[in-house]
Image 1 (spheres, rainbow, N blue to C red):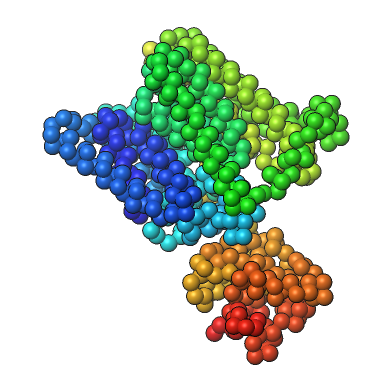
Image 2 (image 1 turned 135 degrees about the horizontal axis):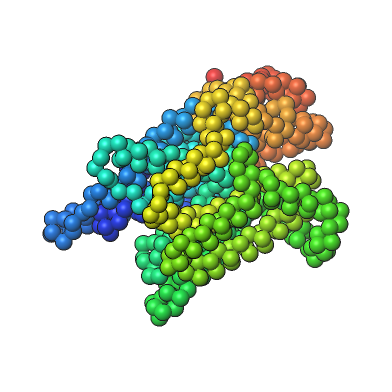
Length: 617
């Protein structure tokens, strides 16, 4: 896995050159790899990211060797290969073992997140409206970019795709372990490594219950925003280039994570401006220029995606429905609690107070915000010098941002989402978790520093906090076990998943150059039926069009649509699914020899002057 080795080597070399802990250099390296992949894919040369990454890594290693031989660099190997490095290695090994046997379990992954990421692993550019497999065409790909980078130069692997998502989560959490140092005693060092690995594995369980089995981006968005704010706090008095760069790249990727990424980007800029503002102002023109670049670069990435969607013609129904949803008439009705708003608003407020973010034992969104404020006020009372007023001002601004965002989510439930989603507050915890979690991550820095500085029983306080956190995380952590995973993976039936994989694997073996193939899939149901969604995923990189009587109507109603779909749109294969008999009979489909098409067979489309289908043996 050359890409992972390059990523690790670059982070280690940077740690040695800059005299930094590995926990500080891995996040910028991972974020840079993701953003490099995005830039190369926008330029329609995705594979170029691999030689560019290799060139940067080689440059860092050569600089390290040159400085070491010149005697101008004394490498602190205890910081390069720190306890955080060992904890990450242990956490990644455990994650790979747990992820490898898992199937796809969450419907959101099947219809977009995993589907879109798999398609991008096979092509050099972002797909156009005619090419894209997902129906959420304008959803940004930020959460999957590191996984796409790790797939450069190797075949697609579902295990690697899901493991790469956890790798990025762990990397963004790693600065919390930056204070760990080797004690040169076996038992304390083992406890540090194992405790650090457990913290990396368990932290997302505080606010999300299926981060281990899904690629949905809210867990990542929470840590991207939290990491940016944490970096801003760490160098609040004297902004440093590496930390500012890491925070800036985190906000760039946040802007590309989802359509709501722009809102979270603005929240991050507000917090960073309050924390860094005085120091950048005192720095004069250099500080002002750094602050302007810090704010402009993430906005440029966000705008580049919007521009690309316009050029490619990609759109989702959320984007199409938004203009009709956000009107003054609806705002007035929402504020007055008319219609559905009168039912949704009380339920929404109740959930803000009482629904645990991780759907198990835990704190609600407002509970996390309250805990953050209590912990920060306690830490400020103990060590006022570590928490100046502008830290509390930044936290207050973020609290106000959360109130505004929560109101906008409630409004969206009423006027943008389907009625059943509004009535059940579908995915409520997922939508509301990023900002409170980011505030928690920001607060952990000064609070942990205060706890470890206690003169009386700091270890007792740390153990009590770890025990409480473990109790909160216990429910989501059961998803790592086979029994817990099967109980959680109810969205996709195991037998359907395995059958679709076997069927599509056999079909792909019959095709010539599947990366350029376009296939009509003759079925008995709609494209949104679960077996057909699974086939679309497993057949990638083949582009598919679902064809059935349920989809297009009777033969008389469809008219020439069948032949036009193949000829004009350039489809060059037809696969008749095993259950497609009634559709084939209804349309009277025949091959070039005049024989009826058979269920389970694959046919090639020939267009040498006339429309014909030839069966592949």
